[in-house]
Structure formats: structure tokens, C-alpha cells
Length: 149
Image (tube, rainbow, N blue to C red):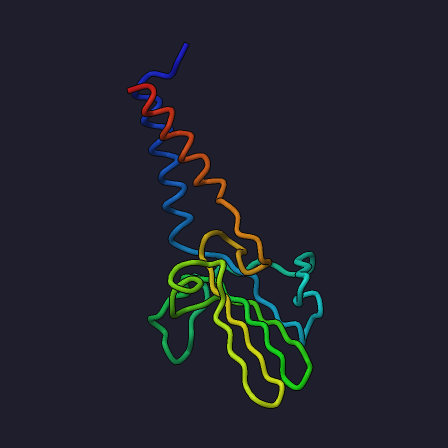
């Protein structure tokens, strides 16, 4: 016994609505390793609450909304510091590929790695890129819809 077309369409529409709703806002880890060493790599998020970026605003650009997460890794005179937060400008990764980060080096033992992402909530926690469970459900629902119709 299979689903009727109406029920299948309803399930597909509800799944799509959940995906779209989650795409409008992103939640990111927000911490600094100079305040809490658990913010460094490897990242230990057991003591941090995830931040809803739509609630944050920049004082000097109040109309700009955060659309990504970022992770900054800095080395200054041999000391490493990690910063994780919401990101407001730019694009995810390099040319849209989140596997790559912007790297900068300078004189006097200075190094900076700047990574941005928006594939899922908390994507600035680690180095692994994973498929969103909502995308997986939408893919399965689409396949079922194509088989039914």
C-alpha cells in the first residue's frame, strides 16, 4: 500500500518548508580561546551555547544581517588564538567552497586563517563538512515523489 499523491505532496511541502525556514537564519558557535581554551582546536562545545545569528547586529552596520559562521585561527608571536562567531560579509569558503579558508601570513611570526561557512548550524565548530539531515530528507522525498508520479 503506497501513499496517495495528495499525502505525498503534503509531506514534500512540509519538508520543503522546514528546509526553507532553517535556511533563513543560521546558528553559530561564539567563543574565543583566550577566554576559554575549549574554543581552540580540537573544539569542545560542551560548555558553549550555540548563538542564533539573526539576533545579533553590528552597531556600525545595523541593516547587515549575519548569514554565515566563521572561525578565525591566528598566530601572533608564537601564540595561537581561535575565534568563532557569526559572519556578516563575504561568501562561504573560497569561491563558495567551504573546504578552503583564506590564509594570510606576515612578518614577525604572524599567521591568520579565516574560514566561513553556511551549510548547517554550528558549521564553525570543526573541520568536517557534512550533509544537512534536512537535505537528505528532501532528497528521499523527491525520489519518492518521482516514483509515485
